[in-house]
Image (cartoon, rainbow, N blue to C red):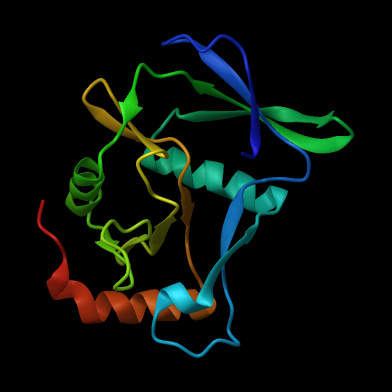
Length: 178
């Protein structure tokens, strides 16, 4: 876990999150030395930089306005740390069926290899927005709404954009219906 959480974990109150050590979550990376038509084989998740972490927060803001607030930066245990605040939700983890419906209604396509029944990667071709690490523990159900609390949104470029654009073009007819 890349965060230390401070404050009372009470519904409707804000908690503070501080990145720990040199950890800023993960960021998708394409290993271009691997030749494959399957995303699972050439996509790796690498440690994110502080800039990628802040970019992730900014993109999460578009999916769920007001979710995170950048509070500042500090040194924590001799490491640079990014401090954010987030509302603590009375919630439960979202189910796969809820996540699939929520993303499909919003125009996302599941990006998966044959090994996944429940895709953790999604792509919205019109917005060029890719979501990674989408799962039951990173999307919560609160007050009748789904809230993506810890997914990795990004606007792909280069080899990843090429793959996802090609994938979307080939699978446009396979878009699931909610």
